[in-house]
Image (cartoon, rainbow over all chains, first blue to last red; front, side, top):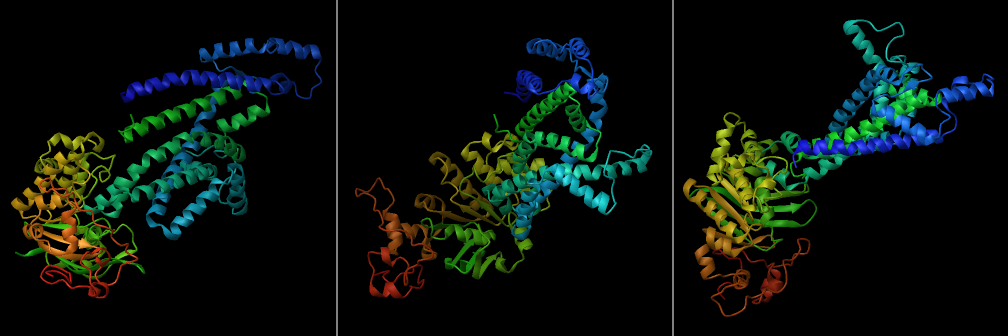
Length: 320
Length: 309
């Protein structure tokens, strides 16, 4: 089967999967206590008739299957609904926040992948205390939750040393133009990106090390050395290439880890992204926003897995 | 005849552990194919690893002796100087071509690696084609992945990569063991042709006496880390002198012989429990007291107290 038809088939499979995810999310949130109306009214002693009228206006008095049907109908026409809490369409809200999240997760992913692969290769190649240090550090890092690490980083570098800002993605007065603005942006990015990258980095370093140790013992590596290939070439041409499919699989299949971590990190660092929006929408019982973000996260995981499988096939032609 | 490869009283041992190769001497001349024969565990592959300078574990080392390649003692060279000789002056071919080719690289990339490792980077495409033609493979093989090739083709690709830089010596460690009998003949023919036409010295490591008879000029029989007999192929097959060699020859299935093949009793002793004296004495039908205490020296191509007895 060609790569193209494989990709198309996988995309078709993703449609029922995402539909199931949408239905499940909808039912879960419907089963949770509270609704947007109670959140909108808050502690104000509104008369019961007024509350009932609002529920009727928003269609919240309808039975669950009817509401679900309407939700899916809107989804089919790519309508994500209206955010009661923010008083604007969910799509507008999400679009405004997407950039910040992509910047944060993209940076964390790049840092985790590059450093993780480098550390893993180094540990496998050098062995001894370097290997033990990398493995210990990776286990420790993986065991550390993002929100806790984030707060430690804020305590150390923002409050203690005062080197870096702790909240937001840019100065409140607005970012400077040009190069200065870019550097300023990096200063804001550094702490949240580190907090988000660390667990992922640990995971990538461990799998890279494990695969590299295996490949270094392979017969074809001995054959490459027998042809006079240097250790650097062996590492780049054989070890990295043969470790890549496993490493990419781990990166791709754990994309959910990055997205879940992003919600926590954004909350701790006041980063104006989708994760922070999800946190706020849960607090505000903002169901449409919640549903939209959960669906986006599911779709991202599905796409990440698909990309992983396609890349895997490109790297290893034996995968039929 | 000048020796291209000259192994002199080579000893290989595990650090603080048993001796795996115990003082063997061999030499391979230009155009000559020397067979190194023995059962598994006899130390024949360790000898190849020693020549290449690549041991399977860092604890295994050459403890004494010399390995001279074109007059240069390899054991005195730095790690990088040895690397620069590997693939350029000594080539190596291994037993199982499917595991010795990188599954994610094309055949052409393997051959290119041999050139690149030694700084040959221009005109790689025609060079790869020439290397493939040399082992009777079509140029189209260059773009194929190992899983798209047959066992024989894979071994030819490995030979092409090993010969790409025109080495003086080729070490072939059981090059046909993993192949079908029909394919074996082609590979052996190729090695014979390279030796005859280009003066390549071949050290052929095998447990298969049939392969030796077909390919080699000279044979050394190895047992438990030592060479017990060395002779021309003709002489060894006609009149083996060491009881171990006699046992090996008698164990070969021969359709022209009425008797069933002889199964030698016992096995090669493990390297950590070598018997004293002649290492073959526990399995030897001709054993006398002297064999149990004093190791026999190599005299006239045979290391046996009872040779000629």
